[in-house]
Length: 116
Image: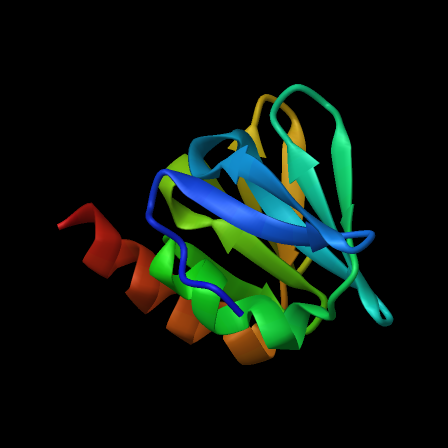
C-alpha cells in the first residue's frame, strides 16, 4: 500500500487509484474485503481493499483506529463523547463515529498527542 503524502490519499478502486484530499475524508468503515471512505461532501468512495491493509497508510495521514470496523480522521474530530455507555467521535456536523471500549484509551491518547 502506498504512503499518504498527508495531503492526498491514493485509494485503490476498480483497478485504478482514486486520489482524495485527506482533509475531505471523515472516516473509513470496513465492509468485508472492501472499505468505504465517507467524505465531507456526503459522497462515498468504495475501496477494493480491507481496512486492515490500509491501516498503516491511513495512520500516516492522521487517522486513528477507533473501532474494529472504523478509522477516523483525527484532524477532523470536533469532540468525543459518551451517550448511554457508548462512545463516539463527532467529525462533521452530526456525523458520529463509534469508538469501542477496546480502542478508547489508545484513541484518546492518539488524539491528545495530535493536539499538542
